[in-house]
Length: 312
Ligand SMILES: [Fe+2]
Ligand SMILES: [Fe+2]
Image 1 (cartoon, helix red, strand yellow):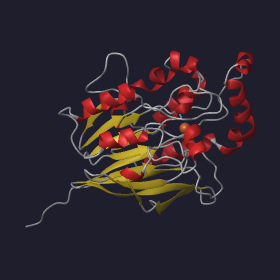
Image 2 (image 1 turned 30 degrees about the horizontal axis):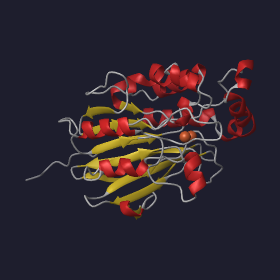
Image 3 (image 1 turned 90 degrees about the vertical axis):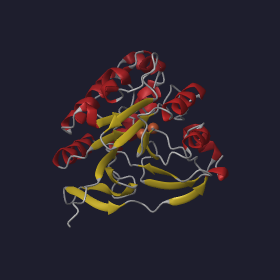
Image 4 (image 1 turned 120 degrees about the horizontal axis):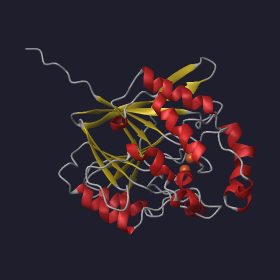
Protein backbone atom coordinates (compact mmCIF):
# COMPACT_ATOMS: atom_id res chain seq x y z
CA UNK A 1 0.00 0.00 0.00
CA UNK A 2 1.29 3.46 -0.90
CA UNK A 3 1.57 5.94 1.98
CA UNK A 4 1.39 9.57 0.84
CA UNK A 5 4.24 11.66 2.26
CA UNK A 6 3.14 14.82 4.08
CA UNK A 7 4.97 17.88 2.75
CA UNK A 8 7.08 19.57 5.42
CA UNK A 9 5.92 22.87 6.84
CA UNK A 10 8.09 25.74 5.57
CA UNK A 11 8.89 28.70 7.83
CA UNK A 12 10.73 31.73 6.40
CA UNK A 13 12.85 33.89 8.72
CA UNK A 14 13.57 37.52 7.80
CA UNK A 15 15.10 40.18 10.03
CA UNK A 16 16.77 43.58 10.32
CA UNK A 17 15.02 45.35 7.45
CA UNK A 18 16.68 48.73 8.18
CA UNK A 19 15.00 50.58 5.29
CA UNK A 20 17.10 53.53 4.09
CA UNK A 21 16.11 56.62 2.11
CA UNK A 22 12.71 57.00 3.79
CA UNK A 23 13.31 58.92 7.08
CA UNK A 24 12.65 62.69 6.91
CA UNK A 25 15.10 64.90 8.77
CA UNK A 26 13.69 66.99 11.60
CA UNK A 27 15.97 69.62 13.24
CA UNK A 28 14.63 68.56 16.67
CA UNK A 29 16.29 65.14 16.12
CA UNK A 30 19.71 66.73 16.63
CA UNK A 31 19.15 67.10 20.36
CA UNK A 32 18.03 63.47 20.87
CA UNK A 33 19.67 60.09 20.36
CA UNK A 34 18.51 60.40 16.73
CA UNK A 35 21.25 63.04 16.17
CA UNK A 36 23.90 60.29 16.39
CA UNK A 37 21.56 57.95 14.52
CA UNK A 38 21.41 60.37 11.60
CA UNK A 39 25.19 60.53 11.50
CA UNK A 40 25.40 56.73 11.37
CA UNK A 41 22.62 56.60 8.76
CA UNK A 42 24.33 59.12 6.47
CA UNK A 43 27.90 57.84 6.91
CA UNK A 44 27.37 54.05 7.13
CA UNK A 45 23.87 52.64 6.97
CA UNK A 46 22.73 54.41 3.81
CA UNK A 47 25.56 52.75 1.89
CA UNK A 48 25.30 49.40 3.64
CA UNK A 49 21.54 48.82 3.68
CA UNK A 50 19.83 48.93 0.29
CA UNK A 51 16.08 49.32 0.06
CA UNK A 52 15.99 47.43 -3.25
CA UNK A 53 17.35 44.30 -1.50
CA UNK A 54 14.32 44.29 0.79
CA UNK A 55 12.05 44.32 -2.23
CA UNK A 56 13.91 41.30 -3.68
CA UNK A 57 13.32 39.32 -0.46
CA UNK A 58 9.62 40.19 -0.41
CA UNK A 59 9.26 39.31 -4.09
CA UNK A 60 10.90 35.93 -3.46
CA UNK A 61 8.44 35.26 -0.62
CA UNK A 62 5.61 36.18 -2.98
CA UNK A 63 6.93 33.89 -5.73
CA UNK A 64 7.58 30.96 -3.38
CA UNK A 65 5.33 31.50 -0.34
CA UNK A 66 6.24 29.79 2.93
CA UNK A 67 3.56 28.43 5.27
CA UNK A 68 4.63 31.01 7.84
CA UNK A 69 6.98 34.01 8.07
CA UNK A 70 8.83 35.15 11.21
CA UNK A 71 10.15 38.73 11.15
CA UNK A 72 12.84 39.31 13.76
CA UNK A 73 12.76 43.07 14.33
CA UNK A 74 14.80 46.19 13.49
CA UNK A 75 12.09 47.22 11.03
CA UNK A 76 13.57 50.76 11.10
CA UNK A 77 16.75 52.74 11.75
CA UNK A 78 15.74 55.88 13.67
CA UNK A 79 12.32 54.73 14.88
CA UNK A 80 10.32 57.34 12.94
CA UNK A 81 6.81 56.69 11.55
CA UNK A 82 7.79 56.89 7.86
CA UNK A 83 10.31 54.05 8.35
CA UNK A 84 7.70 51.89 10.12
CA UNK A 85 5.23 52.61 7.31
CA UNK A 86 7.77 51.69 4.61
CA UNK A 87 8.59 48.34 6.26
CA UNK A 88 4.93 47.56 6.84
CA UNK A 89 4.21 48.22 3.16
CA UNK A 90 7.12 45.97 2.18
CA UNK A 91 5.73 43.07 4.21
CA UNK A 92 2.47 43.52 2.29
CA UNK A 93 4.48 42.95 -0.90
CA UNK A 94 5.10 39.35 0.28
CA UNK A 95 1.40 38.68 -0.34
CA UNK A 96 1.17 36.77 2.97
CA UNK A 97 -1.90 37.48 5.13
CA UNK A 98 -1.33 38.74 8.71
CA UNK A 99 -2.18 35.35 10.23
CA UNK A 100 0.80 33.85 8.39
CA UNK A 101 3.26 36.45 9.72
CA UNK A 102 4.70 36.80 13.24
CA UNK A 103 6.79 39.86 14.14
CA UNK A 104 8.77 41.01 17.17
CA UNK A 105 10.54 44.34 17.80
CA UNK A 106 14.30 44.98 17.82
CA UNK A 107 16.37 47.64 19.52
CA UNK A 108 15.89 50.05 16.58
CA UNK A 109 12.10 49.74 16.86
CA UNK A 110 12.46 51.13 20.41
CA UNK A 111 15.22 53.51 19.34
CA UNK A 112 14.06 56.40 21.51
CA UNK A 113 11.70 56.64 24.45
CA UNK A 114 9.46 58.69 22.12
CA UNK A 115 9.10 55.71 19.70
CA UNK A 116 8.44 53.46 22.70
CA UNK A 117 5.90 55.79 24.33
CA UNK A 118 4.01 56.21 21.05
CA UNK A 119 4.03 52.39 20.62
CA UNK A 120 4.99 52.76 16.96
CA UNK A 121 5.90 49.08 16.59
CA UNK A 122 2.49 48.11 17.96
CA UNK A 123 0.70 50.59 15.67
CA UNK A 124 2.33 49.32 12.48
CA UNK A 125 3.05 45.65 13.30
CA UNK A 126 0.55 44.78 16.02
CA UNK A 127 -1.47 42.69 13.53
CA UNK A 128 1.46 40.24 13.46
CA UNK A 129 1.73 40.01 17.25
CA UNK A 130 -1.83 38.91 18.19
CA UNK A 131 -1.98 36.30 20.92
CA UNK A 132 -4.38 33.51 21.86
CA UNK A 133 -3.56 34.36 25.48
CA UNK A 134 -3.10 38.15 25.52
CA UNK A 135 -1.93 40.14 28.52
CA UNK A 136 -3.95 43.29 29.27
CA UNK A 137 -1.04 45.73 29.29
CA UNK A 138 1.45 44.39 26.72
CA UNK A 139 1.54 42.59 23.37
CA UNK A 140 4.55 40.58 24.55
CA UNK A 141 5.04 37.76 25.10
CA UNK A 142 2.48 36.50 22.58
CA UNK A 143 1.36 32.95 21.84
CA UNK A 144 0.14 32.08 18.34
CA UNK A 145 -1.32 28.77 17.33
CA UNK A 146 -0.84 28.15 13.62
CA UNK A 147 -1.60 24.99 11.62
CA UNK A 148 1.19 22.56 12.56
CA UNK A 149 3.12 25.16 14.56
CA UNK A 150 3.17 27.31 17.72
CA UNK A 151 4.92 30.69 17.75
CA UNK A 152 5.91 32.58 20.88
CA UNK A 153 7.08 36.17 20.37
CA UNK A 154 9.26 38.08 22.82
CA UNK A 155 10.25 41.73 23.08
CA UNK A 156 13.95 42.27 23.83
CA UNK A 157 14.22 45.84 22.46
CA UNK A 158 13.99 48.79 24.83
CA UNK A 159 15.20 52.40 24.62
CA UNK A 160 18.90 52.38 25.55
CA UNK A 161 21.73 54.90 25.82
CA UNK A 162 23.12 56.22 22.49
CA UNK A 163 26.07 53.79 22.57
CA UNK A 164 24.06 50.67 23.46
CA UNK A 165 22.04 48.23 21.35
CA UNK A 166 21.53 45.73 24.16
CA UNK A 167 18.45 43.66 24.81
CA UNK A 168 16.54 42.64 27.93
CA UNK A 169 13.45 40.53 28.50
CA UNK A 170 12.89 41.39 32.14
CA UNK A 171 11.53 39.34 35.04
CA UNK A 172 7.87 40.03 34.26
CA UNK A 173 8.14 38.93 30.63
CA UNK A 174 10.05 35.78 31.63
CA UNK A 175 7.36 34.92 34.20
CA UNK A 176 4.69 35.41 31.55
CA UNK A 177 6.65 33.23 29.13
CA UNK A 178 6.67 30.40 31.69
CA UNK A 179 2.90 30.88 32.02
CA UNK A 180 2.40 30.69 28.22
CA UNK A 181 4.45 27.49 28.02
CA UNK A 182 1.83 25.85 30.28
CA UNK A 183 -1.04 27.00 28.00
CA UNK A 184 -2.84 24.13 26.21
CA UNK A 185 -2.23 25.86 22.84
CA UNK A 186 1.57 25.69 23.34
CA UNK A 187 2.01 22.46 21.39
CA UNK A 188 5.19 21.39 19.56
CA UNK A 189 6.87 22.25 17.30
CA UNK A 190 7.50 25.47 19.17
CA UNK A 191 9.17 28.49 17.55
CA UNK A 192 10.38 31.35 19.72
CA UNK A 193 10.90 34.68 17.91
CA UNK A 194 13.24 37.21 19.52
CA UNK A 195 15.47 39.96 18.15
CA UNK A 196 18.63 39.52 20.26
CA UNK A 197 20.52 36.20 20.28
CA UNK A 198 20.37 34.38 23.65
CA UNK A 199 24.00 33.26 23.18
CA UNK A 200 26.38 35.93 24.54
CA UNK A 201 29.09 37.62 22.51
CA UNK A 202 32.56 36.33 23.41
CA UNK A 203 33.82 39.83 24.25
CA UNK A 204 32.25 40.96 27.56
CA UNK A 205 32.23 44.62 26.46
CA UNK A 206 30.38 43.79 23.23
CA UNK A 207 28.00 41.66 25.27
CA UNK A 208 27.30 44.60 27.61
CA UNK A 209 26.84 46.98 24.68
CA UNK A 210 24.92 44.77 22.24
CA UNK A 211 23.96 41.46 23.85
CA UNK A 212 20.85 40.04 25.49
CA UNK A 213 21.38 40.58 29.21
CA UNK A 214 19.09 37.78 30.40
CA UNK A 215 19.67 35.21 27.65
CA UNK A 216 20.65 32.43 30.03
CA UNK A 217 17.47 32.89 32.07
CA UNK A 218 15.49 32.58 28.84
CA UNK A 219 17.23 29.32 27.89
CA UNK A 220 16.67 27.89 31.38
CA UNK A 221 12.92 28.50 31.04
CA UNK A 222 12.83 27.02 27.52
CA UNK A 223 14.88 23.90 28.46
CA UNK A 224 12.73 20.83 27.95
CA UNK A 225 10.43 22.41 25.35
CA UNK A 226 12.58 21.47 22.32
CA UNK A 227 12.04 25.02 21.06
CA UNK A 228 13.70 26.44 17.97
CA UNK A 229 14.70 30.02 18.75
CA UNK A 230 14.90 32.46 15.81
CA UNK A 231 16.77 35.74 16.19
CA UNK A 232 18.23 38.64 14.20
CA UNK A 233 20.42 41.55 15.42
CA UNK A 234 23.86 40.08 14.55
CA UNK A 235 23.18 40.39 10.79
CA UNK A 236 24.77 36.96 10.20
CA UNK A 237 23.68 33.37 9.55
CA UNK A 238 24.32 31.68 12.90
CA UNK A 239 23.38 28.27 14.26
CA UNK A 240 23.78 26.82 17.75
CA UNK A 241 22.55 23.71 19.48
CA UNK A 242 22.40 24.21 23.23
CA UNK A 243 22.65 21.12 25.41
CA UNK A 244 20.48 21.45 28.50
CA UNK A 245 19.71 18.90 31.27
CA UNK A 246 16.23 18.56 29.72
CA UNK A 247 17.16 18.16 26.04
CA UNK A 248 18.56 20.35 23.28
CA UNK A 249 17.47 23.79 22.08
CA UNK A 250 18.25 25.03 18.59
CA UNK A 251 19.06 28.69 17.93
CA UNK A 252 19.23 30.22 14.45
CA UNK A 253 20.22 33.76 13.45
CA UNK A 254 19.59 35.31 10.04
CA UNK A 255 21.42 38.09 8.11
CA UNK A 256 19.87 41.50 7.54
CA UNK A 257 17.43 41.48 4.62
CA UNK A 258 18.94 44.69 3.21
CA UNK A 259 22.74 44.50 3.74
CA UNK A 260 24.56 44.89 0.41
CA UNK A 261 27.39 42.85 1.95
CA UNK A 262 29.38 42.47 -1.25
CA UNK A 263 29.56 38.69 -0.99
CA UNK A 264 30.63 38.78 2.69
CA UNK A 265 28.72 36.71 5.30
CA UNK A 266 26.60 39.83 5.92
CA UNK A 267 25.15 39.87 2.38
CA UNK A 268 21.39 40.34 2.34
CA UNK A 269 19.21 37.29 2.44
CA UNK A 270 16.89 35.19 4.51
CA UNK A 271 16.40 31.64 5.79
CA UNK A 272 13.78 28.98 5.12
CA UNK A 273 13.32 26.08 7.56
CA UNK A 274 11.43 22.80 7.19
CA UNK A 275 9.42 21.19 9.98
CA UNK A 276 8.31 17.56 9.72
CA UNK A 277 6.57 15.13 12.09
CA UNK A 278 9.73 15.02 14.24
CA UNK A 279 10.17 18.80 14.38
CA UNK A 280 13.02 20.73 12.79
CA UNK A 281 14.10 19.06 9.54
CA UNK A 282 16.79 21.42 8.19
CA UNK A 283 16.62 24.45 5.99
CA UNK A 284 18.46 26.72 3.61
CA UNK A 285 19.85 30.23 3.23
CA UNK A 286 18.79 32.36 0.28
CA UNK A 287 21.50 34.95 -0.35
CA UNK A 288 21.05 37.68 -2.97
CA UNK A 289 23.49 37.45 -5.88
CA UNK A 290 23.53 40.86 -7.65
CA UNK A 291 25.50 39.49 -10.63
CA UNK A 292 22.91 36.83 -11.40
CA UNK A 293 20.04 39.01 -10.19
CA UNK A 294 18.72 36.02 -8.24
CA UNK A 295 19.03 34.31 -4.88
CA UNK A 296 21.76 31.69 -4.40
CA UNK A 297 20.58 28.77 -2.29
CA UNK A 298 23.09 27.61 0.33
CA UNK A 299 23.11 25.25 3.29
CA UNK A 300 22.57 26.55 6.80
CA UNK A 301 25.78 26.82 8.81
CA UNK A 302 26.57 23.67 10.80
CA UNK A 303 25.33 23.90 14.39
CA UNK A 304 27.91 24.90 16.98
CA UNK A 305 27.32 22.86 20.12
CA UNK A 306 27.37 24.62 23.48
CA UNK A 307 26.29 23.60 26.99
CA UNK A 308 23.81 25.72 28.90
CA UNK A 309 25.93 25.42 32.03
CA UNK A 310 28.92 26.97 30.19
CA UNK A 311 27.03 30.11 29.21
CA UNK A 312 27.40 33.31 31.21
FE1 LIG B 1 19.86 45.31 13.05
FE1 LIG C 1 19.38 44.99 16.44
